[in-house]
Image (cartoon, rainbow, N blue to C red):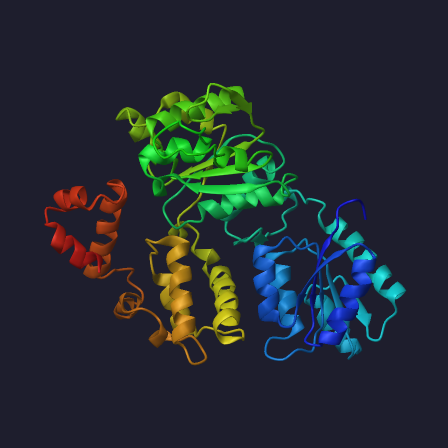
Amino acid sequence: MGLRKENILLVDDDIDILELLQRHLQSMDYHTYKAVSVKEALYILKDTFIDLLITDIQMPEVDGLQLLKFTNEHYPEMPKLVVTGYPSVDGALETFKSGATDYLTKPFTKEELKKAVEKAFEQGAKRKTPKPQTQGAVKNVYADMVGESEAFLKVTDIIERVKDNKATVLIKGESGTGKELVARAIHYSGKFSRAPFVAVNCAAIPENLQEAELFGYVKGAFTGANENRTGFFQAADGGTLFLDEIGTASSAVQTKLLRTLQEKEITKVGSRKSEKVDIRIIAATNSDLQEDIQKKNFREDLYYRLTVVEINVPPLRERKSDIPLLVEKFLRKYGVEYKDRLLRISPDAFRILERYHWPGNIRELENIIQRAVIMTDGLVDVDDLPENLKYQIAFPDTGFRTLREMEKEYVQRVLAHTRGNKTKAAEILQIDRKTLRDKLK
């Protein structure tokens, strides 16, 4: 299997079987992770790159079939091998329908396990052959994103074109649309996925520290610089640096970033020595950079360097046909995390979600589903949804929105325009800061 150890996740509530599998696979030079439940497996999958899943079917609470369906949705290219002590024709059919690559019956020999694992990896390699979008296959899942709308497929089509090169990408979209997910999809779907992915929110770093944090500094460069320190650029060397909210970058950072893009090298603060970096830069913004250029807040030459490829992530209101898939994804995620089972949503509650205009986009939808899962005793229903969503029941078919909703959306738009500056927002709204704080509550 090459020099690199493959990562294999083993899931079984039988500790003896887990240890047997681990012992056999480690002797074959594989690296293994063990989980005694589906819930534990999901935590490992979230933070670890797994090459192969080996799971039992019969487990308490959430069973192996549900895990197969979940990984088939979220990790479609990862091969899945089922090991079970309860073989049957119907069970085998259900297993394969759920996304399994192969089926191994207990008890098994080490040689049988070896052949099954090798076969699973072969099947997985075949799955990784890219299928052109022109063949008309609908992609419900892409990396950690879900969707089937035309707007979603436009985004994934561009990702397919850029994932295997290091062209600079600028991702545009409203807050909460999933710009970082798009950046991660570019990185982890391509041939550089084993290299580092470093995400930096420029707005979260004080302007006077941005240059030092991004490019690093040498000892004595400024008061408090007591040692040499590498920055985010060096940390991401060989991989991808994601610069979120790039519009908030200081003028010094903009100048150095332009040089980095031109010369493929960086200079630490306080140093005269340049260092070569092999890096892909993906930037993102929810503000109008063209407007910032007009106001002399953003360099025009940097803007054009960043937009070698541009991806516009649509707001949720423009891809409402994806809401069912997103709701299912979040119900699975939080149902397993909070209730150790998979939950469903009532038709009435779902209709409310479909009618809502989603000013906070996918992030708002995820937060509402997360809250609903916590509040529900079983089926997610209307009573589990926030009050401002329920107001729409009075206008089921007119498309009207409540005054409270419209006011909330307008306040959010003004805050976005002022980049969160409440004093400026209050001036535009012609109210005092206390009134604004009350409205935000």
